[in-house]
Image (cartoon, rainbow, N blue to C red; front, side, top):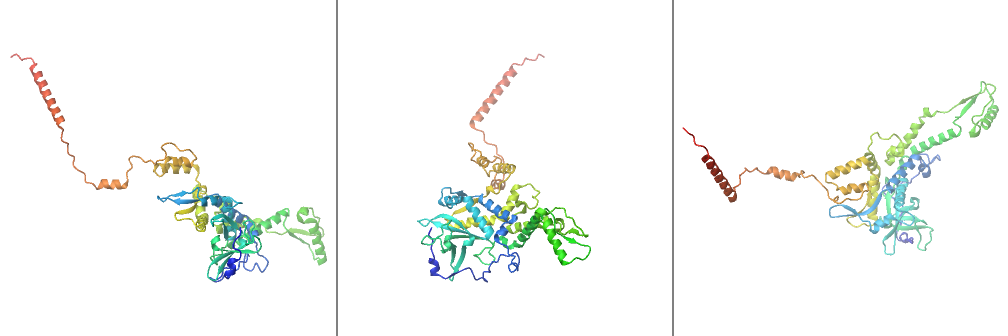
Length: 456
């Protein structure tokens, strides 16, 4: 892929971000003055600390497992996924060496570990974006022109095919900001320069690594602490040096520790080391891990630090983790893709959060049951959530007949009740009544005529 060579560099004077009080150089040191004492900590050393590694990989894996598709908002305000849209297909296979989950994982790791994620847009012959590449943050530098335009200086990258106009991979390439999706984290000093959370946890990481290193050396010495040899009287320096050399050669180290030492002339060995209990080793190590969790906003129990919350509500725990840690990161990715890929109005990239905010089976059953009973879901929606086929008549929400809207009840209560009026009988009913009365009179007369006469 041939990019713009040094075209923009020849036309405008470019410089690293400055102004706004200046861009302070980043010296990776755990505390002020450590660099002068040759005690700086490299990025790789901090990433090797278990809490840092766990937080970064947890955030990256949770981001990568979520579905990401382009959606269209319909006339009812419902976001419908566009499965066959070119941008949806682009995100499913961003380049020739990564799938969607690997691409999102690289994006998240770059941002969490280095504070910046640079995504290069590769275009086809028509100018449309055909591939996306997450660049190594150490190979990219933002530049600002005198007029305030933003450019990016890219070092040669064979994997992303960043090359000069002649196809060579030597030197540097300068591209405009329109060709880079720049996601940055904690821009404390300059809007174009992000800082990783490691910036504020370097001291805790150094302490934790020192605790682990000290423990490794202690157990590597067969759990035997260092000590001193004491004599009841004064000895010369030559004798002390000779005894020290003899002791270290025969009774120290992983191979000699534990051997039987024969001491004469009243010599006595006294071990000297602060015990793990006195040093509160476990508590200190847990504290350093909790500090790392706090700067990444990850609940400690998520990486095995501290106890699991006592209440058994998986959805509530995941919701807390999402709102305080992942929500901002996922929202940034969505909006940056919308802007960088020039998504049309009414369309947006959206993550599918079902894989993250998954409820337990009993809670899912209760939610579907309540939703169907309230007319929010139709039955086939609930069946789909449990990977069951639809049934006939299940695509319509249902409510019980006795349910009335508040509007209908208010309209009914506002009306004055009318007095009941007996309806006028019909002509047929009147004629039927007359015949009935005549019949009854005839029967009564006949019965009277048949009565026997009384003799006086």
